[in-house]
Image (cartoon, rainbow, N blue to C red; front, side, top):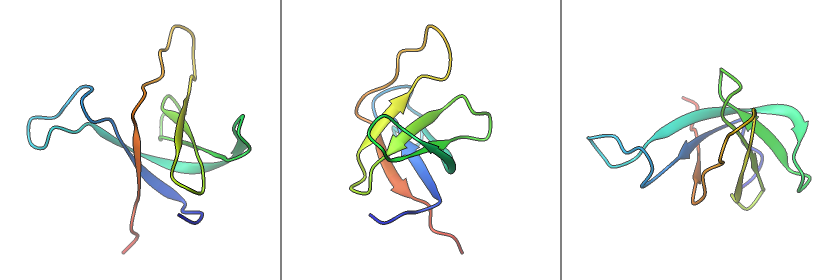
Length: 81
C-alpha cells in the first residue's frame, strides 16, 4: 500500500450516512509511530487517530478517556489531484 500521506477512514455500519451507508473521515500522517511500529494518522482535530500498516491494516488509537475504538475500519488512500 506504500506510504501515503492521507487516508480516508471508512466506518461502514457505524454511524452511516444516508447517501451511501458509510461514515468517513480524512486523516493525515503524523511523525509518531503506533504500537505496531507503523505511522499514526490523525484528523485535523486530533480526535480520530489510527495506526495504518503498509498492508492497509487499521488499528484505531484512543486519543482520550472513555473512547471505545471502532473495529472493522477500512483505510482508502486519498488521491491528490
